[in-house]
Image (cartoon, rainbow, N blue to C red; front, side, top):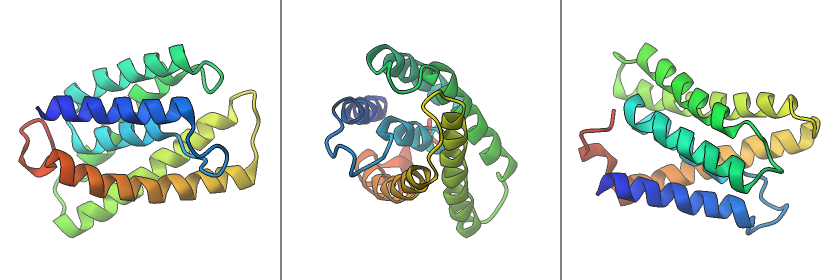
Length: 157
């Protein structure tokens, strides 16, 4: 059931990326936030194939954005899993801070990946993307933890 819920969440986030409900007022990559959530809370053997599938799906349906999502999203899961494995034996309060820093670092890596794209680099929109994505991730994390009941699953960290 938890697999079904997270797949539904990712499909909803993909659909939000597809329709852009807030136009240019909200500069957020919803599916990227879902993959970051998946990488932080699920084990690599479950999150990597799901990230690859949604990366390929995003490349197929949204070719105007970035054409390397099928590479970027699984690499993001690998990087998040590696960072979390480094900080495996720390206290719970520090672990929450490390997770927040990992989210910010993942968003920063996505911005650096966007710099290599032909669309160019606009500093204001990058700052807007970082801030809006970070705060939206914290909000979505709160909501998803309540809905999916993350603390009681065997496939989670």
